[in-house]
Image (cartoon, rainbow, N blue to C red; front, side):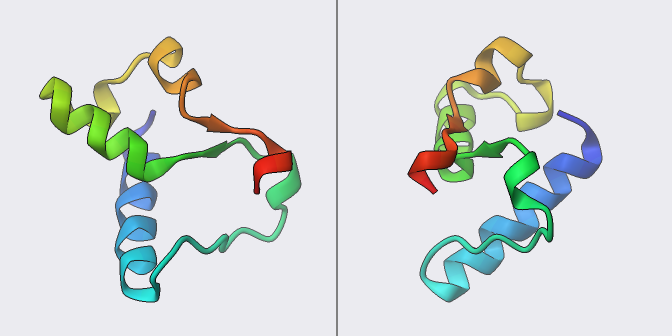
Length: 69
């Protein structure tokens, strides 16, 4: 996860918290991978790591399937 992606996650989390849920602000959402950002933040807090330090293997467990969106 890049620094820019981490910043977008934080921004999205703040927007979602204010709105009462998550919103998708990308135009081409179907071609992108979607993540459960709240679960990522909880995982990182539990394991005392920053999201930017997560491995690809760790991130895979938080991918949301398109049918779940």
